[in-house]
Amino acid sequence: MAIYQSNAGGAWDNAKKMIEEQGGKGTDAHKAAVVGDTVGDPFKDTSGPSLNILIKLISVVALVVATSIAVEAEDSGAVVDLGETVNVKAEQKKLKYYDVDQNKMIEKVQSEIGQMSETETAEFQARYYKSQIFFTHNLFMSTKSNFLLEDVPLKELNQAANMVYGVNSYTDLTELEKFVLLADIEMYQGNYQLQTLQIEAEYDKVFNTNDNTEIIQNIIDQQKLLEESTKEGN
Image (cartoon, rainbow, N blue to C red):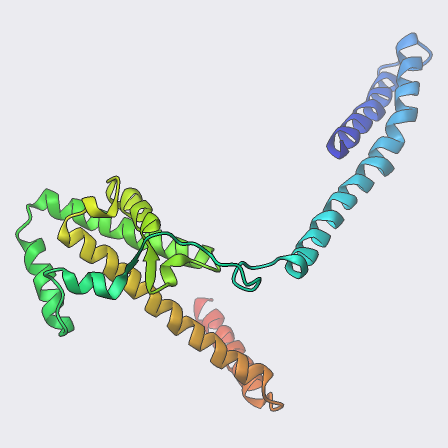
């Protein structure tokens, strides 16, 4: 409605001006255009813009209020049924590539990949990349990703297997594909925990101390670095 009023009002107003510029003042078309202009002016100057502001205001209010009235399932005390789950660490230990020694584990995977043809290796690397993107997107676009749990719901593992490898379920994957998928989950769980610790440490440093000297000094140092890089660029 706001777009219609703004555009229609402008069109009616401009129609009157165009007729007058072409010497049509006093004609029936000009008389009709005057009526249109009478309605068009308040449409484009008051009613339309007001509705635009109202739409923005409603959006802002909704965003602010939503955080106050939203209820998380965990906070409400409700029991969340995740269905059948798979423990990531326990599942990894079942696979032949698993080893307590990280280096030996990598060697086993690399040895398996080394036996693939050039085409198979390229396809495997493409799927590995898709796997990384899938979990990165899932973890960082969701505040409550189930892939952060120790026991991941099987239905979500099935979804990951389908998205990355194009199979119907997790059980359809080869042992190597399962191992890589689980390793990706474990890696992003670790990255998420590391980032959480870093953010919490920074939060404590900023908000749980009355001494802002270090923060101010960091900002000054960053500004100096920016100025130096700008000078080098010129």
